[in-house]
Every structure is written in structure tokens, then in C-alpha cells.
Length: 252
Ligand SMILES: NC(=O)c1ccc[n+]([C@@H]2O[C@H](COP(=O)([O-])OP(=O)(O)OC[C@H]3O[C@@H](n4cnc5c(N)ncnc54)[C@H](OP(=O)(O)O)[C@@H]3O)[C@@H](O)[C@H]2O)c1
Image (cartoon, rainbow, N blue to C red):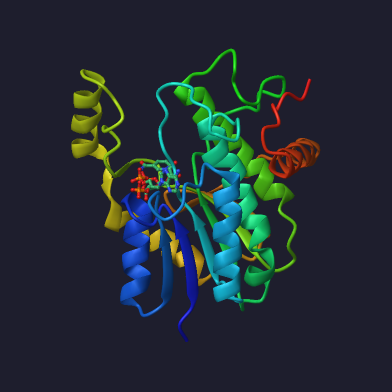
């Protein structure tokens, strides 16, 4: 039976390869890119969730893959640091807004394509107003994904954190020379083609894990490190930010 799969970041890289895979299998694929909705905007994320759930009362899989590397700190119109907005807030909002549609599916799953490294939450300055570095923002976002995955409340929908590790998707593009050339060369030598990254991700979508929250690195299970107290604290903060656009995100 055809399933319904929503893929954010479904117009490029790993998301696009996954979209092609499920499209070829005859599933209903909703592939969202930046032209369809600016998911660094909470309003547009909410709008997308409303439209998708109205059209598709049952969603079998939600793949969270929309991402943009931000070399400099920029703020969205709603007042959030852009990496935090796209990588954390929007992903959390989509997951919670689509919970009812997901929970109606036979074996629903959320796959959060993310890093799984040793990032930390900058509780005193979530928006990195004073110490923005692209990698700091990315690592905080990945850590937030693990915590918000742990806080995601559903008896039915499984939550998978998936780190694809090094996939050739044009990772060199945001950089200037000479880094651009180095990343391009490293990518040509060591990165996996996007189509090759698909099978282990598709295996998790087709046969979701029994555990509520799991993490994988290039198809191999890894330990999930998510303190429940931290998870709840972040969930409450993110919920209040999403409810009050423009919140500064300073937890004190
Ligand atoms: N590639 C890797 O080696 C690697 C490693 C670790 C983790 N990951 C994670 O895997 C995920 C996918 O990575 P990728 O390399 O395949 O990505 P990618 O090729 O750079 O594609 C990014 C996707 O996100 C979409 N997007 C960007 N900004 C958006 C916005 N504001 N609103 C809506 N959509 C937006 C893009 O849409 P348009 O093209 O339409 O602009 C595109 O479809 C990311 O979360 C990344 O952190 C990747």
C-alpha cells in the first residue's frame, strides 16, 4: 500500500535522493525545499504543517532534512538565529504539529537527519548572540535534536536521529577559497554519493526500530545521550519560543 512521506530538504542532497527512492516505489512523497516554504520561519512551518495535515490525515514518515550552513550569524524576521530557527525550532514544530497525522499511521517514524557529535546547549545564550561560530550553532542544533527527540511525546511514532556522516551534496558551496577547494577535494575523495546514503535510512523508515528514540551513524546504531531533565528544560523553552515569536531565547 502506498505510504505518505514528508521530506523537508527534499529538493537537494540526501532528502532529494530519498524522495526519488520513495517516488519510484509509488509512495506519496511531499518533498519540501526552500522555494516551497522558508522553514526558518515559524509562521511558514506552521502553515506547511496545517496544509499537509489537512491534505494527508495519515503520514507514515517525516524526514527532517532542511538545512543551511550559515557562515555568519543572521537573524530571521521572527528574531531567531537562523541555524537555531531551521535546525531546531522548525524541526520541533513540524514534529509536534504533525503528531496526530503520524500517530494514525501503521508504523510511523520521524527521521531527523543531523549530526550526533559532542555539542552542547548554550543555556545562557541559545541564540549565540555573543559567540556565534557556524560549527557552534550546528553542534548545538544537533544536541538540541537529541534532547527534543527524547522529549517527543508519542506512544506510537518512533524518533530516529540519523547522522549520514559525509555525503557528497555540495558541502563546499557555502565556503570561500581556499576552504572551498579543500572541502570539494575531500568530498570527491571521501564522501558517499547521496544515492548510496539512502538504503540504511530507507531501512529505518520501512521498518522503524522498536525503541521510542534511537540514534544511528551511517546505518550503525549508537548510544543516545539525552538527559531527561535537560530534554524537558529545552522542550519547555522551545515551546515558549514557538508560541511567542521574537522571544530572545535567553534562559538565564
Ligand atoms: N551531507 C552530509 O555529509 C551530512 C552530514 C551530517 C549531517 N547531515 C544532515 O543531513 C541533512 C541533509 O543534508 P544535505 O547535505 O543532504 O543537505 P543539502 O544538500 O544542503 O540540502 C539542503 C536542503 O534543505 C533545503 N533548505 C535549506 N534551507 C531551507 C529553508 N529555509 N526552508 C526550507 N528548506 C530549506 C534545501 O532546499 P533548496 O535546495 O530548495 O534551497 C535543500 O533541499 C541536513 O540536516 C544535514 O545537517 C548531512
